[in-house]
Length: 173
Image (tube, rainbow, N blue to C red; front, side):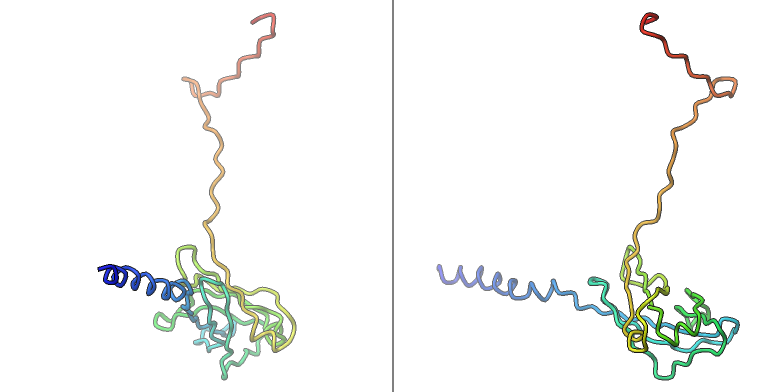
């Protein structure tokens, strides 16, 4: 009887203890495609690279597309492109010479409510072509700013702001 009780209670507990690290380690890796196009052009963009990121650890890496060519114009449009709707979800204007040098990092901003990317931005990064492929930052968004409200204005019956009563001195009290 004691052995059957131990088997019924201890074995499931041991199994839970063994599976606990697997549930705590969140191995979910998400990917997002970054597109690039000429800033003045209305043609469809080409794939600039694919960013793989982990939303729980906020770590990311970028795999540059093999056929990614930078536009010849001084500025490029870089961001999230929805191919089915044929429109940009988010785009930033970037100098192409800074992209060639690898002076800019791709920043993926996640929403506060989930792991989906809200928009993509650029930030200054390390110099060099090797740094450009590895320079990815993942940032989780927070709640937006709240308005600062003043105390309400109290008006008199005739619609004017009442004048404050003068303070009485100690002898008048």
